[in-house]
Image (cartoon, rainbow, N blue to C red; front, side):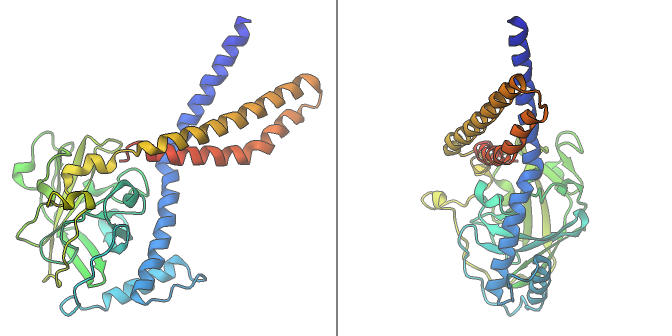
Length: 334
């Protein structure tokens, strides 16, 4: 009896450990699938807004090339102000050649839902290419990890942002001397520095024309925020009235780094569906294990128990994947 209990406990621990590893894999790579799907849709949305052909038969690569040609042909000096986008609308593309980020679509807003689609523009800050401080946030380890390597940037590296007002080039600047506190390489670098999540300074309005990138730091943690600043190398385009996040409008303050902890926080409403889908997976798996166990005792055909697992493999995988989606939304994201 004791041997059976220990055997069951061992199998349970192995199963739980396997599921935990699978979830870690989902966070690192599976969320990238979700982000890629969002990026494809954003590509088509941007093409449509620009009057670029985005027929279903066209590949995302072909549409991207047409979008870039269209945006590069726009003269920022004569382009009219952009209409204020709605939250989650595609705003433009961002490229950082030094770290291999090319034509990534970014959206308006930096909520957890917004950043699942790609980098997000902080509502309440200037729009890229316009006067003032424009701020964009992005993930470093999940959902495509667009800002994974921003700690590798050096002064002078280019960040290219394209919007409906044209193409804008920014050059990364050195991190300010007064931000170089703590251990070099851990808390700051030549072109980046870190702040605590409640530090509002990096994306406040500034008299110069700059782009500020923010992300969680270190990787796989939300303890700090990494900040990279770049200066606009040409004259700014016409200004669009900035938008404020709904919860900030009543306070009269922009959506700033101070709210980052709330922005990456998990959604408690996702716990119930996560448990429901997880329970469905566990139930189906237990039924399959029970049937396989009965067949193992009742028949000499060794392949029959494995056939049971084969039959339920696809639905179990789907149930587990759906559970992972809701668990990921319940947990903080980095």
